[in-house]
Image 1 (spheres, helix red, strand yellow):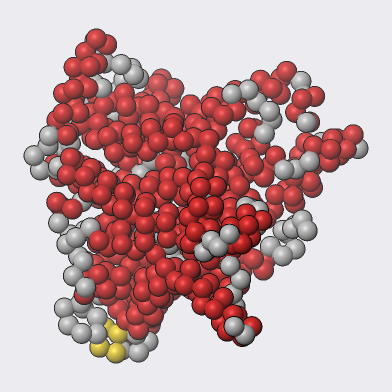
Image 2 (cartoon, rainbow over the protein chains, first blue to last red; image 1 turned 120 degrees about the vertical axis):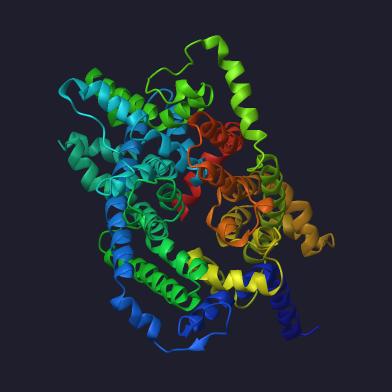
Length: 301
Length: 287
C-alpha cells in the first residue's frame, strides 16, 4: 500500500469515528440554523408556505415596542445578574478556601440547588415569595413587624419582579462556586505569603495576585453566564403564568417573546429573525469580552 | 496558607458567614419538604414551624399529600415519570456512547481536518438552543415525530459538544503505549476503544451519563415545544401543569409534587457527589 493510500485510509477512519457528531451537527444544528436564517427573511404563518419579505422582519424589530421592551429587560437582567453572581460565587469560594472544617458540607449546600429542575425552582420560589404566607415575608414580619412593616407581594409587584428573578437565579450559582474554589486552590501559597511579608493587606493581595491568576476562569464563567442570561426562559415563564395578580409584562423576556411569536402567534418568520439577532448578540458580546479581556486576563504559559 | 495566621475573630467571621450562606441555600428545599408534610390549613397559616402542630401526624400527612398528588386523575405523575425515565434512559445511553466514540476520533486518531473540526465542536457550544428551536420543531413535525418522544432522545445519539470535549481531555490522558501494544497484537480501533479506552474511562463516562441525566430530567423548553399532548409530558412539564390546572392548588400538595420531581436528582447527588463536584472543578478550570 502506498503512503498516499495509507494517508487516505487514516483520514477516512478519523472522519468515520467523528461522523455521529458530524451528522448531528449538519441535521440538528447547521441545517436548522440555515433554515431559520431563510425564514427570518420571510413571512411564515406556519399553515401557509413562507413568503419572501426581505428585511421586513428586521425592520419591524426597530419599531416594535414589545421587542424593545423585552430586549431591554433581558439586558437589565444580564447587567444585574452577571456581576452579582460573579461577586457572590467568588466570595463564597473565597470563604471555602480558608481551609474550613466541614468545607464539603458547605460546598454541597450551595451546589445542591443547581440540580433542582427550573420547574421545581419556580414552584419553590412561588411559595417562598408568596405575598401572604411566603417564608420570606414571614421573616420580614417577625423582624420588622413591630414597626408596622409588612413584606411586599414580590412576584405580583412589577417593581420587584426583576429583583425576584435575579434572586431566584442567584440560588443556582453553585457550579461556579465549585469552579472558583478549584481555581483559588491553584494560587500558590508561597506567593501570598511573600506578599503578606511585604506588608500587603488581604484586599491588595486579592486584587494584585489572586484576581490576575484566576482571570481566565472568571472570563470563562462570565461568558457562560452571559450566554445563559440572554436565554432566560423557564423561571419567568412559569412564575408569570402562576402569578394572576401580577403584571405579566414585568417578567417578559427575550426568549419568551420569541417563543410566543413562533409557537403561539404563528409568526415563525419574525421569531426566526429574533433568533438570529439573539445569536448575533451572543457571538458579538463573546467576541467583545475576549478582546476586552486581552489586557486583563493573564494566561500562564 | 495565609488564613492559618488569622486570629480567632477572623475564623469566627468565616464560619458564621458560611453557616448563614448554607442556611439560606438549603432553606428553600427544607421548607418545600416541611410544607409537603403539613395539612392544608397548617401550610397556609404563616408560621415558622417546620413540623405539623401534632408531629406524630407527619406520616399520616405525608401519606395523604403524596398519594393525592400521585393519584391525581388529571395530572398523571406516574405517566410523566415513565415518560421521563424513557427519555432519560435512552438519551443517557445515546449521549454517553456517541460522545465517547467521537471523542476517541479526536483524541486517539491522526487525520487531516481534525483540528478545524474540533474547533467547530467547541464553537457550537455557544449556539443558544432558542436559535434553532423553530426549525427543529418544523423538521420533527415534517418527519412525523411530533406526538412521540423521539425529538427528545434521538438527537442524543449524535454526541454533545461539551461531552466530546470532556471525554477527549480524559482519553488524551490515557498512555498511548497501551494502544500501540494492542495494535501490534492485531487489535482494531474498535477493539482498542472497547477493550482499553472504555474500561479505563469508566469514571469519566459515568460523569457524562450523570450530567446528561440531570440535564434531561430538568429540561423545560425542549419538552414544552416538542411534546403536544399531556400523555407524553415529562415531570418538569407535569409539575407546571399541576400548578396551573386549578389555579388554587393547595401549597402542601404543590410542595409534595415538587419534592417528587426534585427528589431523584437529589438522591443521585448524594450517591455521586464526589464525582460530580470534581469534574465540574476540572472542566471549569481547563475550559
